[in-house]
Every structure is written in structure tokens, then in C-alpha cells.
Length: 235
Image 1 (cartoon, rainbow, N blue to C red):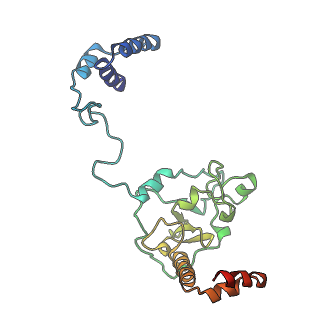
Image 2 (spheres, helix red, strand yellow):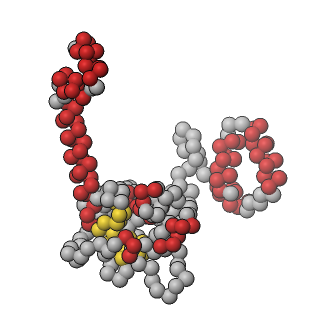
Image 3 (cartoon, rainbow, N blue to C red):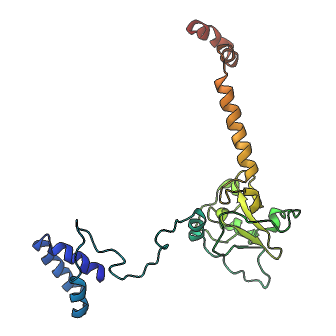
């Protein structure tokens, strides 16, 4: 209602025709407004240059991030997460999503010698894959890439905590498996662990150096024999 009144104030100051049309819409929708509230809201001045009063001047609750605070990637990932379904069994599921607030990276590994259990021991719903659902959340809302072994696009960005050890893990698209969260290094929410990122960077650097040092003779050797004469003529 308050937003409609603000829009009405803007329209009345610019076009009487549109103001009449909005009156008709209010009558059709049977919109009832407290006259005192309307008078108080309409009395608010319009900021210079047009537009509507700010959120602070309208005393509206601010449900977003506080002003001046930067929204991190960790917070965006948390907003995308959905709680997993509660299984109908008495036992707890092998993994649970880490509850917010989440740090931007793993802050430490209490047991660095511990190994990540096998994938089959980490999935929460082993049979969900046969029904087209995610093996971690048992939901079909998100797509499941073929190389993800049944883990959906929503769960492969989540941080998981193994029960009961408390080990923090995350899906790595390079390893195509769960890895310790600390293995992702400073980029805690990267799609690949630090080892896979380094390997990818090395392959890229090697290929780039190979392309830069490629000579005409080297290019000639890579072509089929029937194209040698044509290339030599152009060179």
C-alpha cells in the first residue's frame, strides 16, 4: 500500500489522466487505506530530481545486508542452499550441510592425517539416483551433471560436515569427488580444489608456451604429408 501511495504521488505530479486511471484501479481492487496514514505518507517530500523517498526516510524494515557491508561469495552460496530432507530412518545421514554463517575458507584442519571416506560412504540417499534425484539432498529441483556421480548443482557448491567426525568436505569438479574443504585453499568456494587448479594452470602455461615457440618447421611437421607442399609454397 505504501509503495502504491508513493507511485500515486509521482503520477499526480506529472499526469492527471494517469491519476484518474489509478483511482479506477483502486476502486476495482477495493483498496482501503487509513486516511491518517495516507495524509502522513503523502506529506513526505519527493527528493530532488524525482524518484521515491529512500528506504530510510520511509522507515521500512531493511531485510538486506546492512549498508556498507560487502556481500561475500560465501553468503551468496548460503542463500542458494536448501536443507536436505529428513530421512525416514532412525539413524543420521552421513553428511549435513554446514550451517551459516560460513567463513570464506576453511580455517583449519583439526585432523590433517585423516582421509576422506569413500564416496559410497558419504552419500545420504544412495538409491535416489535411480529416481533422478540428488544423492545428497534427495531432490530433483536442480540439474545433475553426468560427471557429478548423482550430486546436483546445488549440493556441489555446499560445504558438508561428515557425521560424527566433523570433517568439512566439498565437491571438486576436477577430482569428481569430495575433497577436504581445506584442500581448496584460499579460494574456499572454487569449483576445483587447489591441486586441480594448479594442474590446470600448468597445462595452460605449457600449451601457451608451446604455441608461442611454434616454428614453421614445427607447424609443417604437424600437418599431413599431402599438405606439406602447399604450406611450403605459402611460407
